[in-house]
Image (cartoon, rainbow, N blue to C red; front, side, top):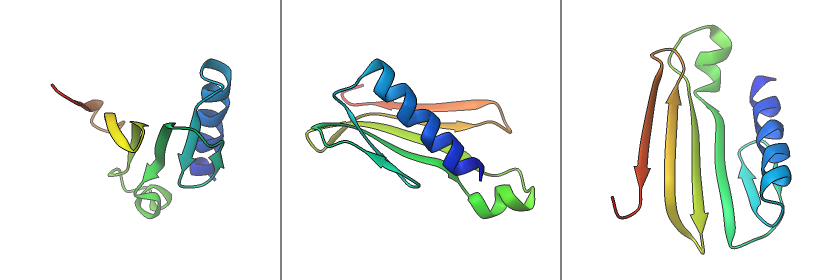
Length: 87
């Protein structure tokens, strides 16, 4: 499934660039660290599977249990929503 592939891709990239970080994905997890990437690869999997264009990719970066950055990508509307702690 696409959501597993996306989750695995994220884990591969985090391992490559930030080997001391962890990933808590909806489909798969990796590592244990105070630096954690939390991912829902396809938020709206059922809709995605049915071809309804309303699913998004969600990712947050968490340090010591506090979200520092959050992003949501809507590929159908080509929109990226972001939130950064303190901004």
